[in-house]
Image 1: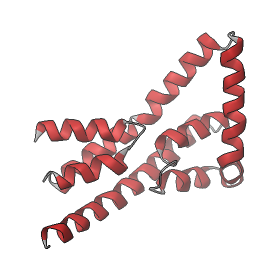
Image 2: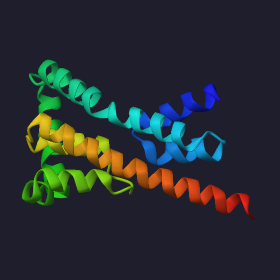
Image 3: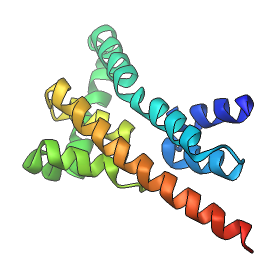
Amino acid sequence: MLKTLIYTFLLSISPFGEARAGIPYAVVNDIPLTWAFAVGLAANLLIFPILMWLIDTFSKRLWPNRVYRRSAVSLSKRAKRGVGAEIQKYGFWGLMVFVMIPLPGTGAYMGTIAAYVLKIERGKAFLAISIGVLVSCTLMAAGSYYGNMGLENL
């Protein structure tokens, strides 16, 4: 069980799956739903502070580098075009809804990057991303639970 919980945590904190992969993995491997939800949620909530710290650290140290600065500006412009209008228009609520939709390309990683690029206040961004992650994890846990029940009845 511990091994599966560790894999669940790692899947939930990875940028490739987040809790959208971690929670279903745990449920399919017979981990109780509450444990799967708790581990997936905890890992997904850690993304914001870790990623913000990484962005701040790399930006401070690498900003003098011309190649990094050009890449960062290009990425910022692309991110603003992709999600900026909706998130800037609706602010806190837009960021929260963007993170809570369990689709590829949304989630805590992209929400954190969008909050940084759009210069949303960190406290508000963390709260919006946390609520979005909570709703997303709840949807994934419910879907995984009922999906697994359906698989067992086949």
